[in-house]
Length: 616
Image (cartoon, rainbow, N blue to C red; front, top):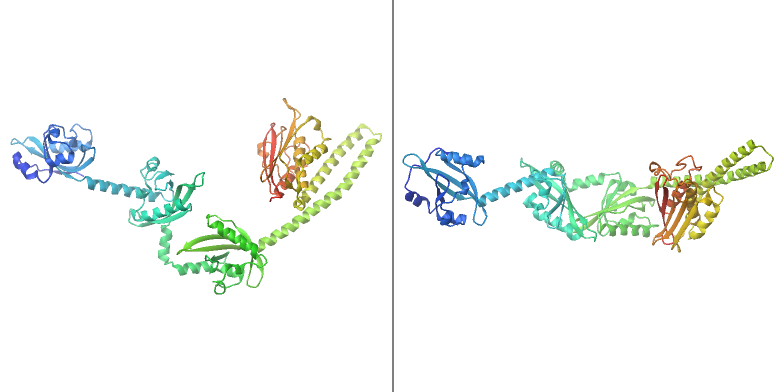
């Protein structure tokens, strides 16, 4: 801001003028060309230059009247017109420090009315200017920070230095914010609270949060809650923290308007009847009880509050249930995430029922409280039981049907063999061959259905697996297959001793994978020979089975469907569409994993991991 006064002081003798001003202010006298002709001792002290160094030198504060900056052009235009100029000028001391001077420049005229010099009077306002600009800068940063919430997500180190941010703040670009101090964007009244929350995250390696209040341009309060989460390095140490904030002003205002208090929260909590919510203290006694809990367990709040949580757990399964609860309590002390477990509850009238159980915790006045959230699983369990029964019925139907069908199919095969022994013409031969192929396919389907029907029933039968013998027996069973002799079978078994699983299911798994490799082998390779490679390798947890080939391969769009029942990749190669379905079903029953990689016309690789059931 500058001020122009239209009066100019009359001519005064130099000595009288200097005596009047010298002892009280910072002063300099400048000739019409902007050179120092006099500086007082106060000016020398402020600038750090000696009197002799300054006299005759250009006054840099005024730059030059030829300067293109409109600010300086206006200054020179004013004083050259004989008017007094007032404003703030910046300069540098001999040490390079920036000086801010509240300056008044007065033109002095001779008897003829011509300007012969300028008297400049200064007041050092450097400190107040710095404070003003610092205050404005903090205000702008705080405004930009608060306006960006909840879109701002940033990471910091333990000292509050911003390591990264997802966007800029106000006029500041992203790279200008990175490296700055988080606390410059936060209301100083909350610095202590924020430092405490951040320190907690780095010291305890656990999430924390803090609430702050800021003000918008209308001086209205804005409330924020910020979540601070640890970020771990490869060594498991807290390397940095992630902060995300949410504007909760509306929630705070609603609370104020409604006059919410603890009793109203409790009333709301107790009235919830969808789901069971129970709060217990750090010694396991019930302190809160909602309507959902009352409906499921039959106790009113007055009857149950103060009693141990164990009162709600079935006596028949108490040891197992208590063990599960202790396990998740121990886990929740180390992490905010927890498992959901199933326990057997017992109501007021002695009726047992299954509940799904999850736990969370919080601290209040140095005490820990746990919130047990439960869901009555009675209906789901009944449906699961019915589904299991229906599945068993279906498996039994498949098993009996497959055995009932085998006899007539075997008889049909025998009759066809008798017909072939008769003196028949070529047409009948072709027809019998076609009928034979159809019957063989029917037999294959029946065999596969029989395998499907007994997978669930047999998976608990665990024995030591001799992979070498199983593979050998399967290869012998395929010797009659077309092109079997043209395929190179590569077998590599490493440390497979000591693997226990279900022999029948593992054999069926190998049978289907090897058969798949044979059926889809490529006899038209330009280079090399068709192969089926079988690799068996044991691990600490179990065994890895790889069956790979260089056959026709599977198109990428079909890979997610190959384990579906009756899905066939193509109709060129005969099949039932049940082989890979059976493989996946067996792997699931044995708690294993299966992965497939394939390229069209390059081959396929199935990799299966099965646990060692003697250890599991």
